[in-house]
Length: 287
Image 1 (cartoon, rainbow, N blue to C red):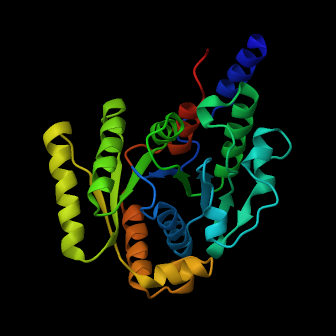
Image 2 (image 1 turned 180 degrees about the vertical axis):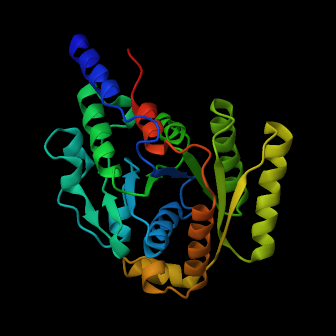
Image 3 (image 1 turned 60 degrees about the vertical axis):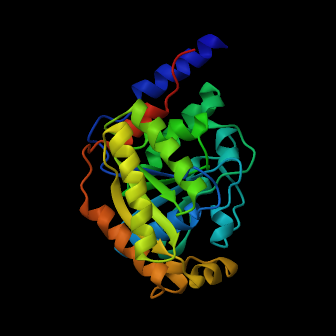
């Protein structure tokens, strides 16, 4: 069994894409705690990017509470569980979402990425390679909190977007996540987005508090992506299982998501081999 695992890992390394082969950007979206609207942000950014002509795939990597498909009113016949089990190829489970985005649905309760066996790991990574070959963006909706599987995705991704709200508990938790990522890779680009702010002043105060902490204790600055205002139209869209960018494009939150997506497009990443790096990062170490 160990020999077979070693052979599969060697095969994965041999088939890994060379740097520069894929120009897609890989962003993992995370939050220190649940309930801050992270999945809404992921869906909104994906739609805003796609509406601007970008080719976007979203990976629902919240294996505990997978709900991206529910948020968008989609009903997957198959999920990532079927891919990891060898029943389906990744391309066969892709869901078509608004504005042409493609979604890789997860299934609640499946194994974490850090606990996949070599065969399941190879299926996942090879499937992501094929899917990412023709896209501009791979957005990864991670689980809330600081777990091994979440950190692995954050470290493998090209960039990390951290979502928080102005609540003190959310600020403490998101700073803890900044610290964990920074200590592992001080050069990892970290974006910050404040969600559900009651106004510009509250959002700026939240940003200032986090920036002050990261400057003082980590000697680094966060990239500020922007703020999303508290907006009742978001809840209306959720109730209809649609994205606010699609259903209410002139709503304050939809306009803010559009601005955030354009800021991401304007900011050229430091490294161009985004998916190649992601591939290497997801491959587990030899036991």
